Length: 390
Image (cartoon, rainbow, N blue to C red; front, top):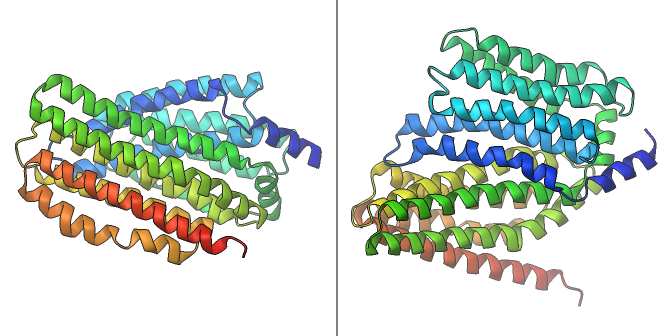
C-alpha cells in the first residue's frame, strides 16, 4: 500500500458526512427500544438483558464506524453497504423487546446481517490487495461470525446464546492478535478527528434519548412536581454533556493522536471500542431513572431506579476516567476529580434516592454533577498550568 493511498483515504475520513449521520438514525431507535426495560423498577434481569442486547448493536456500529473511518464514505460502494446494514440493525431493534426470548432468532439474524455487510466491505479491498491484510482475517472476523449468529437463530434457548458468546469472543480475540501488516494499516489510515466526531455523535444520540425521555414523560404527567423533576433532570443531562464535549472531546483528540503517533493501538482500541460502551450505557440507565422520577416526583424512587440513577452517574465518570488514563493523561489529574465521585455517589446520592422524594433525589444528582463538573474544570486548569512552559 502506498503512502499516498493512506493519506488520501485518511483525508477523506476527516469529517463525518450527512450519509453517516443518516445511518446513525437507526441507533436512535435501538437506544429507545432497548432502554424501555430500564424504566420503572428494573431488576438485575432487566439490566442484564439490556447489556446483552445493547452490546452487539454497539459493537456492530463501532466496527462499521472504524471501517468508514479507514476507507472513507464518499464512494457509492460504501454508501450502498451502509444503507444495506440499516435493515439488519432495524431488525435487531424490532426484536429487542423480546430479544432474549421469542424474538431472539430475529435479533440473531439482524446481527448476522450487519456482520455480513462489513465482511463484504473488507473483502473487496483485501482481495484486490488495496489493503495488506491476510484473506483469512476478514473471513474469520466477518463471515464466520456472521455464520455463527445466523446458525444460532435455528437453535433453542439457551444454546443459541453460547454461539453469541463465541462470535463476540472471536472478534475480541482477533482484535488482540494482530500482525505487523494490520498494525501498520490501522496506524496509517485511522483518522483521529473522524473517530472523535463519530463517537461524539453517538453520545449525542444517547443524550438526546435522555432529553426525549424527560420531555415525553413530562407531557404524560403535566404537574408542577413533574416539571421541577424534569428541569432538574435536564440540568443533570446538560452538565454531563458539558463534561464530555467541552473537556472530553479535546482530550480525546490529543490522546488519540498521541496514541497513534506512538503506535499504541491497544489504547485506541480500548478508548474507542470498549470504554465508550460503559459511557453510553451509564447515560441510558440514568435517563431511565430520570424518566421514572418525572413520572412520580413526590414518591421515593423504586429500588431499581435508585440503582439506575446512581449507577448511571458512576458509570459515566468511571468511563471518562478510564478513557483519560488510556489516553495517557496524568493519573494525578484524573484521580483528582474521579476519586471524590465514589463517596459522593454512594454516601450522598444513594441514601437520598432511597429515602427522599424523587424530585429531591434528582436535585442531589444535579448538585453532585455540577460539583464534579467544576472539579473537572479546576483539575484540568491546574494540569494545563503545570504543563505550560516557564
